Length: 241
Image (cartoon, rainbow, N blue to C red; front, side, top):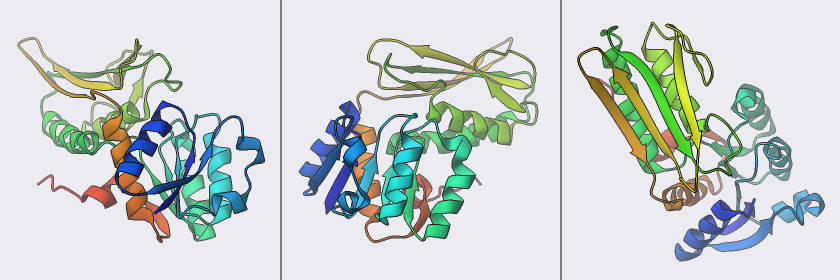
């Protein structure tokens, strides 16, 4: 499969490494030096585009990808407040879009565990829930897209929580303690604390390889497709019953 990589930082290079290992060809790399000169025709050289850039560039990049008609996998976060508008435009254009707050298969299984535990804990108001997320100092968005997904899952399941915040602590708020240090790939911890005990679940990434593999798998899934897809379409739904 012929791939275009839009964004060629550490993550882009890891995606390239895994893509080549899986027998794919990278026909174009878009970075800061050449981004302004890239045309729709250039993007059409690929059968799928994988976009991992920055929150500041992603919406403009997605517009170019949509206009090219090339199925696109978007791993950049920080734009999901525009999700409804963007996906509506993509469907209207008849294009193919795959997006996720996190492409790691392990993280997406962790999402299932988080949702299931939150559903259980709704019946136990003596447990206060909070979250800690830790990432490398280069990460631009706070909290992470993964943390937002986890927080929204908790809010959907626990009636006493109606919003999340990285600054406010209140009875109806899920507080997210966001930490940026070193080169941490990504750690997310959900804490349930009572006067008698604590319950915690954690996902800790060891490196970027899991994210990159998931992105390449998503690209393989998207070849020749139209419509809007997420990791649930790739790994399948797990029952919460």
